Image (cartoon, rainbow, N blue to C red):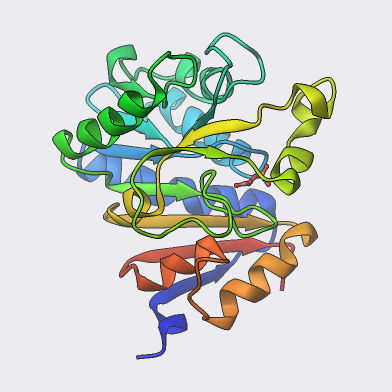
Length: 243
Ligand code: PGA
């Protein structure tokens, strides 16, 4: 079977619809399985998705009380209260507004002395939790998923990575200057992502057109990390503002 047909492509009319469609998939799973293990992502793309989840919680439609979450990645050398950290982003966009228990919230630890141990422990925790039910993903302009940059072996679990200049440049808007953007990060590996039962990939905006085209081509190569998803059996790509 042609790999491309494995991905389910949904074109959304606009950013709000993309966010809503993705949130609907998580809401449906959460209602059916209150102990859902959510795989979460940060960045500009999923902000609307989190808004939808918070609104659904506030409307009494869903509860996170028994759920748990695992985020994709975190910068190294930045603590969770730093406004540029992904933990802080998650607090602001979701965790501070819903009833998920703090002990059930997991973001890789980028501010620990033993990063390798933290990385190995992260995969053990996910496995002990029964695996991620739905993993949300964005995509970098270079095709990265999580912080798995081009060239990353598909076989890696959670690990410590050096960020490419392209990624540091794309993320400098969250810092005072590019010099402040961390050089290293801790990220779920491609293998960790592939272990999720279901994957939802969001693509929004013209800056992602090239990444979109490459994903659509169906070529599977470690030079383009998102292409690993062609080997996953349940991936939905929801896109808007790209062709
Ligand atoms: P973005 O980031 O949503 O801010 O574009 C996506 C990514 O780099 O994975």
